[in-house]
Amino acid sequence: MANATGARPATAPSTTDEGVTVAVRIRPLLARDKAEGARECLRKVAGEPQVLIGADRAFTYNHVYDLAASQEAVFDGCVKGLVESVLSGYNATIFAYGQTGSGKTHTMGSSCSADAEIPEDTALTEDSGLIPRAIAALFAGAAATEGTECRATAAFIEIYCEEVQDLLQWNAEESKLTTLPIRETPDGSLTLSGQKRRAVSSVAEAMRVLADGSRNRATGSTAMNATSSRSHAIFSLELDLKVKGKTFSPKLHFVDLAGSERAKRTGASGERLKEGIEINKGLLALGNVINALCEKHSHVPYRDSKLTRLLQDSLGGNSKTLMLACVSPGDADLEETLNTLKYANRARQIKNKPVVAQDPMQARLSELVETISTLQTRLTHYEAGGAPLPPLAQLGALGTSAAGGASGAGAASADQVTALMKRH
Image (tube, rainbow, N blue to C red; front, side, top):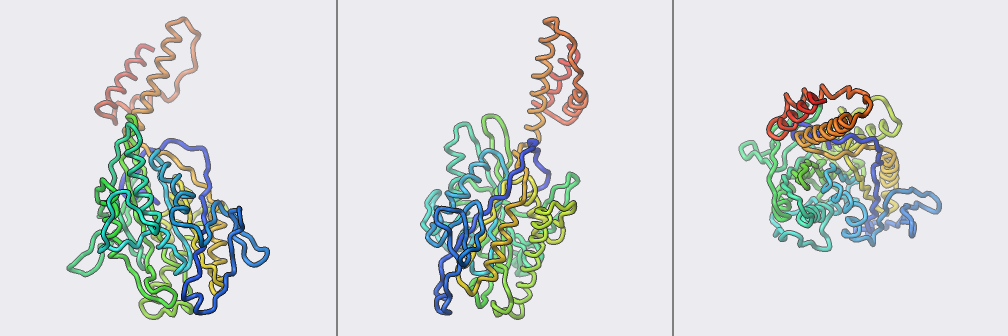
């Protein structure tokens, strides 16, 4: 997701492309499906990350989970590694896509009731979704890593009818959520003006943020889902990591997309119909971005919707990204299932350039330390009577920038650079 907290953190250069990871999860037939006489029309190929439709139409992904797969198996298979990457300083995004009623919110675990008892720290149940499991793994991983300090904040927003709303800010006087305008800063990053972030120091505190936001999320009943999510929701954790003297500021985003739907099947009318139209517009814009990235267009239409603007870093940007496509096995849902599988298949072709999100001052200090090391090596070379070396073309610019923009330890390093330059 695009940086929505202000200044863009410094990032280590990356020359390595990494594809978006795609996982497919097939939910079981529901009581409603069975009552309608639905039959299974797809299955997972045994021992292969493939989905087979009919006798011979197969789609291949990074991971495929059938109806027997547990929540824990999905987390361990495709999310645990992303959590470990976040603890190493990388940004990561996990987003769930699929038709309404396909199991996205259940899989993500983003429907935690605000009235439910919040378990202490790492207590998880069999039904705990990816978000609670990732929260537990993040705090446990930070605590178990020697020399690591971790501070975290959590935020929760939704995009409802093309408005970004803060799920943690209920305006009692106006009986609605606070709307957050998207602002672009001079360095090109995005900020959600007025967004509320809560400091969280434990799993229980982070889960409380999830629960409080879930209480405010827009839902409504349709013929296909009694509690259909009517908005795209994004739950985010922003970390301040100090690992062996280095500071990183990675973010982990969970995106629970509203379900794609056809008005005829959902029986939607009035407000539900209007919501469905807006949901499909956002998903269409997302599909257009995916197509443009896959076909390597010079222009990618990120600005066509609020959703795609906020997901810009996650699709073709600097984040490690997992797309989780949730599908129904019922033959009545075949058309929507095929659309989801094709959507996911295209997403596999997207290439990101994941980078470590390093604190800007720490990045500057690292550059200065590297410069000092280079100068010391050259000085030793000259003192030993070595032949002239090629000039350091950018040394003057680096020294001037450091001296003018750093303070404290950064300024001291700039002085060391200047002194070494004079000796050189």
